Image 1 (cartoon, rainbow, N blue to C red):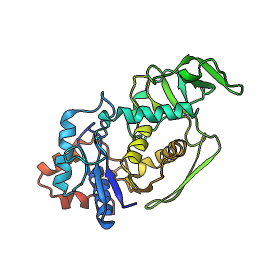
Image 2: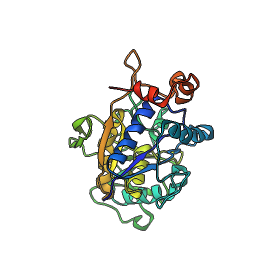
Image 3: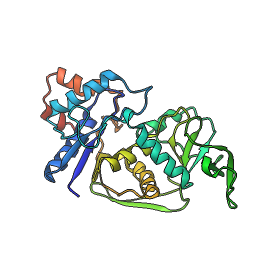
Image 4: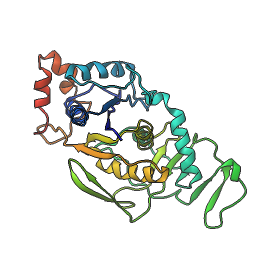
Length: 293
């Protein structure tokens, strides 16, 4: 397939140097392959996404000199390009995972469940789930009462994901391996490096892991360029890709931009936002030069 890359910022804060370097890399790789670059607004979480940040994202990206061929502002054949308008795509994938018994309903309470809707970064990755609800098997309405001899089925019919957390049951002990174009060979052990992860939140919000897999498939993305803090997420997403029989894209995880203490830059570093740096008189070249060598 022709090369198709994507840049996928979330409107939960202003873009900073780390975003600039990663998105510039994605742009350059699309240019090098004479390919298409897609801008996707990952406004999945209604509680954290803000309209003012969504409006700032394309302005800041254009200031850097990045150009895209598809996106919320220019349209394209695989829209809508805002995750908040793509619920039907996620529901279809949820039904396939439910019917295939890849996921199960989880009624455990988690105060930090909101993290499941956002891309997990250093220090806020989804914690290992102890498996309390792992024995539960969802029963679609069409199969209610049929029973499954080797599994514990639910009496409740699940025609909708609403009301409970839905977790993907990982194959414990399996090594999930992939070759990253930047970071080299990678391998994570399911059940040790990560556990059963959330694909849909009880407040009826699809989780980041599911949404990006569905969108990358629907938008025919051939290479995913993002930060190295999402390497472990790739292992989770490869399991979803296999369960949904999707095509597997190539991966390129950029080096992270860190402060003087070695901490990954985050949106809380407002002084290093592109807006603040531009107001200080820095040029796009100055900003990109602040990234990793």
